[in-house]
Each structure stands twice: as C-alpha cells, then as structure tokens.
Image (cartoon, rainbow, N blue to C red; front, side, top):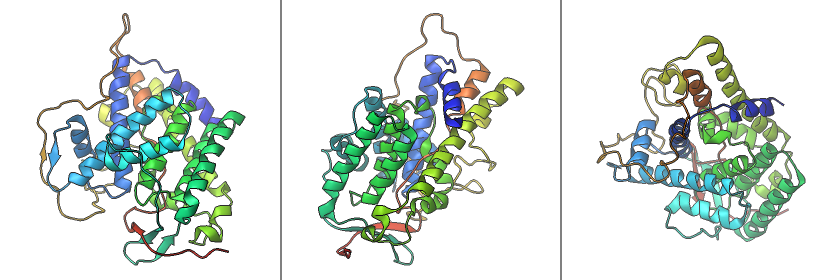
Length: 366
C-alpha cells in the first residue's frame, strides 16, 4: 500500500517536458555509473557523465571502463523503449541486452555459456557460488521466461515478478560475465513495463551500491554454494522481503521529499540531487568517503578526460514544451528530482573482493 500510494503521487506530479528530459537524463547517468561501479568500474560519476554526453571523449587507461558505461547507457535506452511498447519478455530480449552490455550496440545476441563458471573471493580464492551446469542453462532460462509471462497474465504484483526474475536470473548465471548488469536491466524492464518505472527519473542501481553487503546477504538464500545442493529449492521469502522493503523505502523517499517541498520551500539543486545521508564535500556518489572514489579494479589513477565538445549522446533528445506549458516551479523540481536516488540489484559476485571465473569444476549432482 505504501508503494502504491507513493507511486500515484509521483505519477501525477505535473512537470514540463523540458524538465522531464533533463532529469531523466541525470537518472540514466547515475544508473549507468553505479551499475558498472558495482562490477568494479573505476570511473567517477562526473567522468561517466562526460563520456556519455560526448561520444568522442576518452580517458587514458580507462578504455574498458568507458565502454562499459556507454554500453549500459545504450542498453537502458533499449529497455525503456521496449517497456513503452509493452514488448514481452523473451530469451531473444535477454540475449540482446547482454550483447549490448558486453559488446555494444552492433553486437549479435549472446548465446548462453557453454561451460562451467564460478564466483570466487578474489582475495582468498574461496568458492562463493557454483551455478548450474551449462547443459541445464537453456531449459532453466526457457522456464524462467515462460514463468514471467504467465505471472504477468495472472496478475501477480509487478514488484514480486521483478524480484523473483532477478533472483532466478542470477541463480542460473547464464553467462560468464555481465550477469549482474543484465539482471538489473531485466528487472528494470519489468518494473517499467508494469507501471512501476516512475517515469525513469530514479537510479535503482544507486541504492544497492550504497550497501552491497546487505544486498548479497539477502540473495544468499541457502548456505550451500552449489546450485544443486539446495539453492534451486531455496525459500525466497527473505529475499523478497528485502526486495519489496527496499522498493518501499525508495518510493517513500520520493513522497517525503515532495511533501517537504510543499511545506518548507525549495532547497538548492545540489541538495536535491544529493542522495539521502550524503554529507561528504566533493563526493559525487554515496560510495565515496572523504571525497574519494574507490577503484575496485586497481589503484592507478586515471588519465585526463579529453572531451572534444559536448556532443549529446543518442537518446538525450526529446520533446520541448507544449504550447502554454509553463516552466516547472521550484517545488515541482524537488518532487521530480526526488526520484533520482533509489534502488537496484546485482549478481552474487563481481563486487570489490569478488571475481567471476570460467572454471572446469564439475558440480556434484544429488
């Protein structure tokens, strides 16, 4: 009920088309930054903003990081477009999203892995999770897609569908790499398509990046690391409670900001954009401390950003004000900007201190 009440308020907040374009763009940048940051990307939020805005911008020594951010941005645009068109969830959609994430817009749909993968602690080498064998992946993915479409037809609440699909996708782990980013995009697609996208004005990824350990604990629904030894039949109640309560907190934050604006006036733009609890000077994201950004893939400093002008990237264009549409008021701005800080989900590994590897381990079967 809290989610539905906050959703109704946000969806009926009147805003000019120009404001929608700007704030949606800001949210997408944060989504691309934090989703790739979770996986170890070393770009700062400002660097991510630059390389998205200018397709010719380069950062010396960070070519892979730049590519990851841009790929996620383009994949997010694809997700939003397919959600608007009410496209069904298909294996083809999943394979195309993964191809976008890993290899860019021109890549062909990615086939599922043909060997065993494993998630290990990058420091100790300890095995964290062993997904199902490659031979079982096609059937498991087909079953996941069929269930998601049937659940949608049956009227199961959209947030529950998104939570269950996310869990099962990372449990199957159908690719060697990029599972987390693809899972986040797939869950976002389900929420947007089902009317829970809040106009695309928030970054789900940012919320999970603030507290990765809580996210990982919620996903660990069974103590055994082997898929065949319990995880395939685990009780999902704790994960779904975490997922729904997180979504509730995000929607409530938006509602509270709108009420505060109506009662107390308008803070500055910097205060509007700052995530709840962010106090550090010069910090462009909730992960950093004392103004610094972590570099999970290494401590070497990045080279200078070389931006050759501010050429807008694809997808930044949009509608302009309709006739007679006034600019948004300061209070409306806060109501809208309040949507930027929010949530998302990620896979079991590939965070700082974790790594995913292709291995030759053969899991034992019951």
